[in-house]
Length: 484
Image (cartoon, rainbow, N blue to C red; front, side):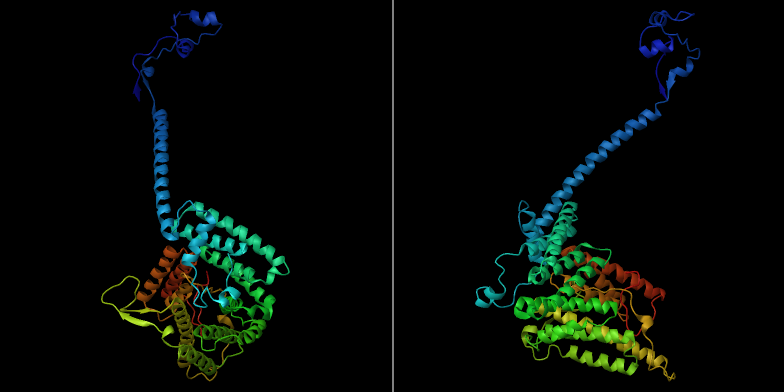
């Protein structure tokens, strides 16, 4: 309550008009002159000594608070803007005033690509088969979308996220137009664009694999349309292996065999392949494991001894993938003392080039999967040793409902799935699982790949289900929880 001093004794109308009232008992003269009915005089003067100002003070305080919050938000926005500028300049190594397409492509080339091993750019072979003389518009647009998505994730900048989605929409429209064109539908640029768009989904989508799967399926359908002609150039052959290997993981996830047309195209591709190349050995191993897994799930292979024998034979292929390849594929072991950030245990590997690191890790996670199958089959065999029907089982109940994507490109994409498998295997220790989770979050923070965040969440869910005993025992291991 607020003390207002001595109140006026005049009528209400005069007080409202803020004029002096003559206070005549029968009605004031001022009201009479104006033609008003005088409302009379307030006999209880005590109540008007004080007035409740609560609502007015509250309103005034709220306005002051809102003004203060607006100023603080504006200051925070300016700070975030300065931080984003510093992060972006760090990430793309280019001034902020350059066009978005340059920023996107610069980030893409710095973080998501590997330089050509051979041939050198001044050779006739390079200029005949690999020189692009500048990126095709559909490829440049897709690269820009992907690069801006990475920048957006690293800097948490909503403006870049909005621009990334805008460039993504442009790339989709251009790709759809190319797919309707009788010539462009078979071009390397169109296939590359679909592959880049799948990477965009892996980079920007942290909630679902559906967008990634949709683009992978579209890329795979192009392989069939391109036919044998796609093997005419080194670039075409590389893109075939890249796309078919990604497709293998999609079929792996669905528990189905690779399409017949892939096996036919593999025969044609084999005419150009170096049979001792570990990358090529890995690809064909991945296809065989995918088909093997599908046959077990469909009941085509149901004898436990056959399952173990086949898995062991495939594991032997994986073990010998690097036999006789020379020092250019071999890594060096370095021992450390004490804790070192990014190193699990006391040893880390130094590889001569990124392709070696990628291929070694891909071979390793396939061996992890094969060893899980062998281990599970032996556990089941031993636990049912006295059951004469144990050698023949129906595995259809173990058919997974999940898709397990992996993207084989550099810049963190190639590490996501091998890391997840290493953490999801039943024999993984809590320490190794924590290391995997930390590494996945580093990939999100340093490369802007949100698919790593999605897999980190999946691993946490799997760890929780394992602790609660809610994961069913299966000969064919399923790594992703059913909710993913």
